[in-house]
Length: 433
Image (cartoon, rainbow, N blue to C red; front, side, top):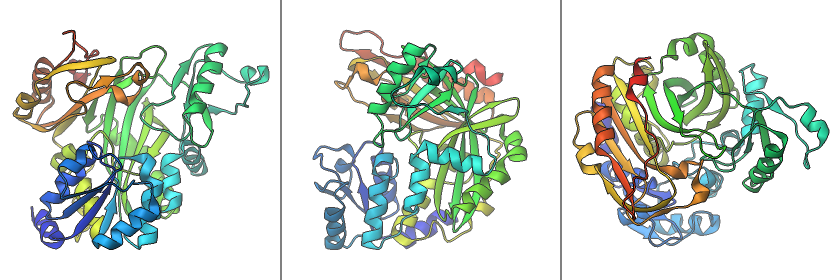
């Protein structure tokens, strides 16, 4: 509580520019305003959702670096943040550099977080296990096929949200999915990896003034593989059942790895597979995540990374305190992010949001779409199928399961023809395994 009071007093009257006006960006706007900050949102879309709740909206495009720098000067803005939008991170860094405002990441750091090949090479340099990949030529030759053990996963090296990813069991599928992945890669680079049907985890690190420390780990539950696409997340459970194994086997090595590239502030998340205590990394991000885990971690691990990043943006400091001294990776509380997925179609009705928000333990209910929105066929197998997330905290797994079951009963999404659009949801009984 004392830390929050310090933040509010120090930030009163500061001006923050948020790059991109997506609904997720509205999380930044809302929290910054709670902290007494005046918020401006820059987006070329006049109807961008985050603009509606901002103090001021600008039609300047977030990727027009010169125009944004001029806006910063004209409005006497104290800091800039993009938060969730990976594609805007390079522009965020350039804007901060030219406007001489705090930026939590260098150009090189952003490249590690946006280019899967570069991140995997960093891991190899520090003997951190990564998913095996194959060096494939374009166009693919018969000699390439001789080196591959199917099934494999094909994906662009520099895109997000599951775009351009496909599972291949035979050569013809590899050829087709390779071209698809290539079309989603800004740098025209594709990764062909061994397909890993292991359990998954997401690992969270926080960095403050050069100190890198483990924040938490979540077990990532996936299902609903569709038309050869990757299974999508339906739940995240905190803390991970694999936490102690990770701390014993990899934590120190990974901390040293990140320190070697000179990270100073911010948050990093790593996606990995795990089996029998062995962890295999496949990608990282140097940004806030769409999973909105800070709603959980602020209750379970005594850290709200969104607040710290906002504070850094307008002051150059994540906190007046040493965050690592009060952050506890393991917790005696349990947190869960329930992720709802929907089929392609036009949404006719969404039910349950307000009722769910009132349930004991629910810390946030985030609905991605509104009635009348259309989810296209191209969204299949990507995170564009996520219609909503519910985040909750409980004192026991049994309590968590009871609330989860209530949420699954309450939340409904129907098409304009009255059919349910929800894909298969998470079975809460899996939490007891």
